[in-house]
Image (cartoon, rainbow, N blue to C red; front, side):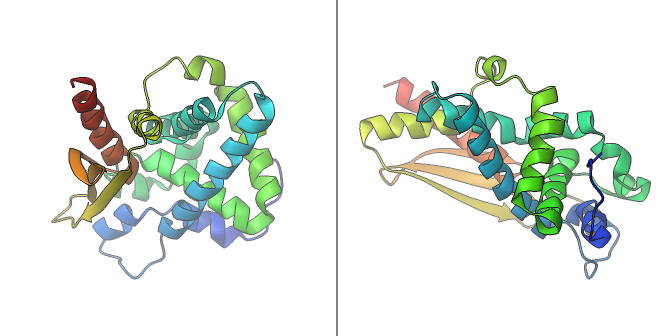
Length: 218
């Protein structure tokens, strides 16, 4: 899958152990991929931003921001993870124990984080662009698909010179439930929408969607 020989195998093993599965297996002390997922999320943002900037010199900042958000959103990452074979590398016990809605996409992010730590940004970028983006993503078609509410509300607020603030909190899970997130959006310190989701991004998208519907109805 990688196209190169990995150096630190332990990093890649860690990338395929989600926190949700460890919690359900009552193994809170074991390492999990949460930190690698966090890192991979940031690295993916940089890779996709760099890719779009170089490939589409005619695209303005707003369009590139929308495209980047759509490529790195959980639904798209879930799809890309399946295409590249990520589910086949997740241990069966982990698949059975985890009830994370975006297990595959989150694991892909952790996988990118592992590549970055192991071989650096250049190799992580080459892997994601050559083996995933170029094969499975058509940016020009993607721009016409489902809207990215967060980017749209931010773009609208910038034009109106309105301050946008998202306040996103993680709800503590109970029993066998995975953690969920609640996001609230404020426009000029006025609450305009709330949203819930299994990830921070999903919750913020729902909050942004509600805010957009309110500002359009004025």
